[in-house]
Length: 154
Image (cartoon, rainbow, N blue to C red; front, side, top):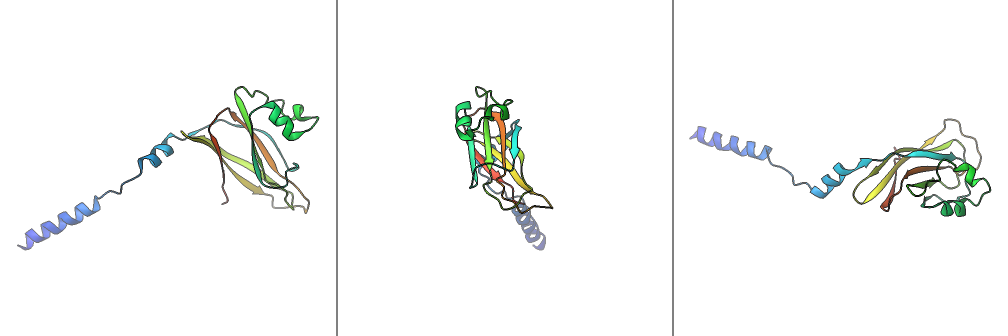
């Protein structure tokens, strides 16, 4: 009888160990289908006219020129003017009280619904007390998908 009870207890523990947790297949599928997109950094700097943190998406040369309102806009973006196949994405940190702040793009990924721009902010070890407004502008292939920005704060 003891062997029979022991056998049942062992079966119970083995079956409990093999239980599985149901996973939402939509989450798994969207993660698996995310692919890295090629991107290139078109322009970075510390002096924009943007006062608050904002993201911009430029679908055309007209949008770009209206935004920058500068005589040298064409010269600045001479390598990124193919708006039939590409678009520009800008990350602007707004006004900062120190220099030495840079935006680094970690990755651009695409899934069925959206394009995700992952970036982080680098702080220089030596920072001058000066007003800056850091920004980064990248070029990606043109898309109608929603653009999502993810800042890595670690």
